[in-house]
Structure formats: C-alpha cells, structure tokens
Image (tube, rainbow, N blue to C red; front, side):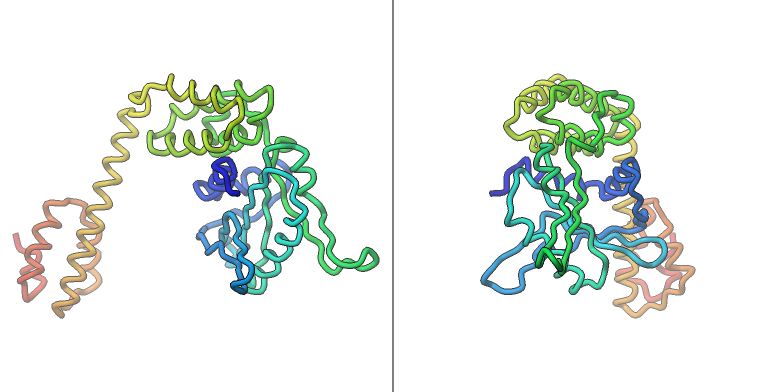
Length: 294
C-alpha cells in the first residue's frame, strides 16, 4: 500500500530533480548535470495481467546531447519481490527509451537501505546473467543537517534529511533547522516542502514535533516584500506572454502578414495596456500599421 510517507520521499525529486546530482556529488559519485528534465509515464506494464509502476521516472538530458533515465523508488521495508521488479523496470526502460537507466531507492531506515543497495544478481550462481545495482539514499549516507544556514542553502536536501532521519534522535534538531530555513524562501515553495516533510514523517514521533514547529511559524513571515514582488512580477509576465500569443494567433488566423521584427515587438512587449490595445485592433485591422496605431 502506498502511504503518504512513501509518496513524499520520491516527490522531492519531482519538485527538484537537481537534488539527485547535488546529493551524489557529496557522496563522491558524479553524474552529468541535467540541462533539461522531463517527467515520463511511470507505467511500465507490458500486459494487463500484471501492472507495474515506478514511483517517479525522469528523463535527464545533458549538455553533450545525451542523457539518462532516473527511476526513483521509495522503499519502506525489505521486500524480496522488489528485486525482480527492479530488474524488470531497468530492462524495460532501456528497451523502450534506448537510454541508460539509473535506479535510485530512497529509504527511511538503515537496515532497509543496506538491503536495497545489493548488488542483486539474477541467474545461476555460477553465471549471473543480470546484475542490478541500485543507488540508495538513506540515514547511512544523507547528511544530518542541523544547521539552519546550511539548510537554507539547499532546502530540498534539508527536507530529504528530515524525512530520512525522522526516526533518529537527531530529528528535533534537523526539523528546527528546516523550519528556520523555510522562513528564508517564498511562501509557496515553503508550503510545498513543509507539506512533503509532514507526509514523509508519517506516524513517527518526529511528525508531532514538526506539526508544532509549523504552527509556530507566523504566515506573515513568508510574505516578505521581495518574495511578494517576485510573485507579482511572475504573474504579470505570464499575462503579458499569454496576451502576446493571442495577438499572433489572431493575426495568423486572419491572414495578416507578420514579419519577424513585428513578432519580436509583440512578444517583447511587457506593458499589459499596450498589448490590450493591440489585441483589440488585431480583431478588426487589415494591416499591421492598424494594429500598432495609437
């Protein structure tokens, strides 16, 4: 059964895919930094008889034109059946996408983490045909982030630290550092990682500590002048881009020739009033001069 704790551990990688390369660099395992990341379907079912789904599947495109697949699994306990499932996932993904797959397993206790890392050899002892070597993150290798300033430098990693060490005696100090770090970022992002932390801690005693810490954070603290300005600017830019796209669509639909310099003028405009005037003119104009007329 998929629990909220299980869900939170792999969702962190959806919120910030770059956490993968950052974390393993600290463990002295280097992967190419992605220049683009895209979510892929998590369904790897071949027939209707057996349904198989990966928790999270990301395509990581790299600067050299190549890339790889990152399959993220959250594992709460030892499960021998997973060995066969993981081998299936990797073989299926390689055959389907023709890209090298990497399996990352995120655990919340050290025994499960050490069991998960394998290597898992499939075949005869004398001649294993397939070897699965998951990368594993858990309490044994995720840093204990108890310093608020360090937590603020990488909130996703601090969140992962809080979840994986949720059963540790260090949990209260880690959670306090994370709570302080969340006050330094914008409200929307802070709420996402605060919720992921609560889900990831599940029913552990640390979950009660986290709820108390969240209640002690005044919501006004998130609403700094800078973060509110950035959000307002983002909304304005989005509206301007949408309005510019509407103008170009109307001009194209009406058959009005629009050279590249005119398109650049429209898409480069950020003034909503001006874009609104051009939009109204585009509905009835027969030439570009009429569109841009005052």
